[in-house]
Image (tube, rainbow, N blue to C red; front, top):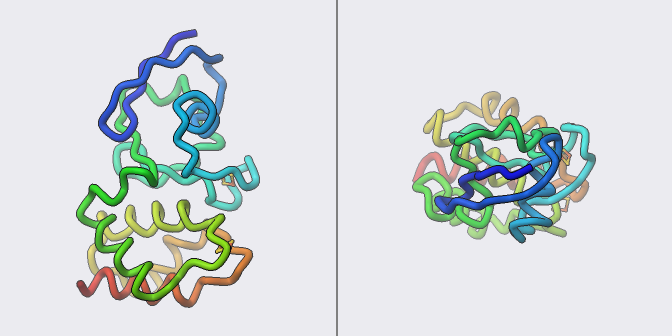
Length: 151
Ligand code: FES
Ligand code: FES
């Protein structure tokens, strides 16, 4: 079945089953491989993208539920105001270790700052609680979000 979706400001026509997860459309059909597969069950956050600015687990989002909503992936997050600040703070704080979880972390952090420019520490922890990092970069993530909020 054909669907037209808007990803990072560009329209894409994709021909897939309606229950195909958005994650696989992004990675395998459109070729945007920055968004990662972790658990496939909305438990790890590696696949997080924005749908209309809201952090969303693309692994459990069927393509037929997306409609005309604007999708943003890690490839374009640097074009947003909050994304620019988050990426700079990530570099300044040297957050990344292996990197596998980090696209999802940045997408969740950016959605948080865009909706709440001055989050408290507990609000940061709550917003980021669904993003798992096997390398344990949580302390640097929290510090980077605080830096981005203050910048
Ligand atoms: S791959 Fe989607 S939450 Fe883990
Ligand atoms: S940086 Fe390795 S899993 Fe998070």
